[in-house]
Length: 148
Image 1: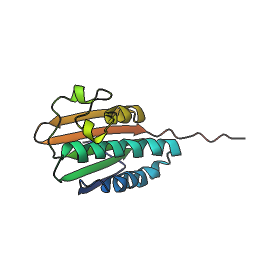
Image 2: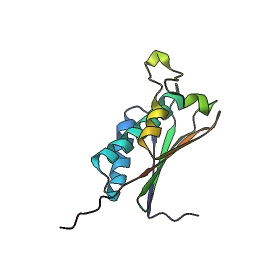
Image 3: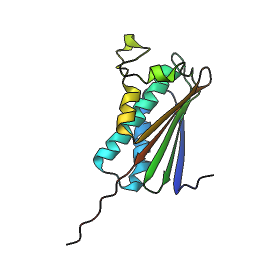
């Protein structure tokens, strides 16, 4: 079992207005690592994309619970966003830029691509009918203070 310096777990309904709540909660937790504004924006964007995927794709026409778990180890923030929705049939296809199962909603199909580009690591686990978990890692680069 890994030892983390701090952790938090958050559960909420898959309502679209909870996406902003999720990103702010994770940003507030991440703040203890003293990230730059850019690092914080990356984290918030990745959480938004992942939560939105759970709301729109995971639960489609019903509501369910989305769980976010964050853990800090050293200067690394681990974020897991999981749902008990319909799951992803083919993760490799789902990760392709511009792929979307909801073109009628004007979805860009760039969610996983955005997460991959904004985070240092991303892993997707999914079982059809049981749900999906997106695991992300962000290393916070602490600025060295120049001594004069």
